[in-house]
Length: 426
Image (cartoon, rainbow, N blue to C red; front, side, top):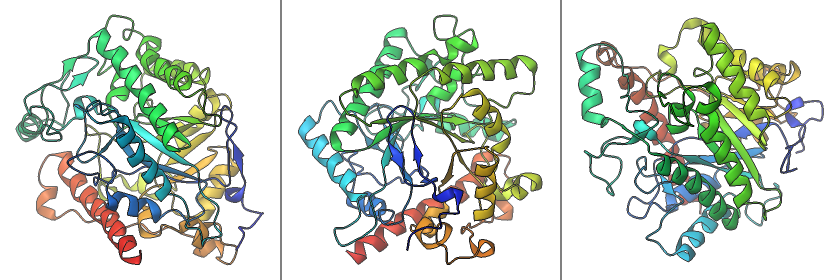
């Protein structure tokens, strides 16, 4: 059934650089599936089954889970786009198969959704035990050798020591390698048939660390001022565009953290606006606003009541970003629960796309079944969210990662179960 033409959610949107037109404003946002092949870091059958579950949902855009760009900087069971020890034909074939899994079956009348791959480098948020290819004692890379802050007290310090090695400052050649690996990853993904990439500069990962004056204390070309801290991202965007210039319609997006830009002091606000204005001059097709990191991570149960009551968590910063990004479409992910709330955000001009992550686990066909379905009344057009209670004993542990870990593991298992369900259907 076609969506209601009266809904702003159902309106198409043409991205400004690639000229790709997405059919509606609902995006399946990225989640960490944690189920790539643990031996090869290639897409596993389970991952492909998970991907296929969204294929007939009428999503305007589908963003994959994080794909790592560096063989030595891999989060647990993540797909790896750069594999120098693997023949490129093998890597390309596997990625092509993964791209195909997002397409509707031949029997379906649902048009395929554009699929964007999220590229990631964890930086100092690399767990000691995340990769078999590196020693657990080898320091992760970061803009500056500043360890993670998991909170005050002895227990957070012990947890940080056990889980995360002290980071090492990146050299200039390593920064150039970072740029090259983003570009090469984008190229292999373009060859595989994906519609674009999203550069991950949120959630406390490496590029977020470059942007922030708290984690970037460099005094060279990549630190010291707001513009220099943003330089590596600007160069990555340009390098990705250059590498994929032969692929017409290839999308380049960016993910930003709202909390990293919501500075309370005057200088912090001015720096944030300067960085947004620099991004506005690049060839970006869209920017996504989200939130959270290992240093500032909370399950929904631990959020302030005022935050829980808001329809979306990050609209306040989104309004600032929308103004400064000068026409680059803005996607907001986090906290949307109702069709009416999504419509209101679009109508006010707070965002151009609505990102839905965890709700897509509980209903992979959410746009088609509910949000764009004209037979579903506004008061009934809601998403499914599960507030995972943190056991009272764990709430007493003064470590933010514990409660968030309970919440994250619950949703990760639900996501992996989704793949098992799709396999049974096949």
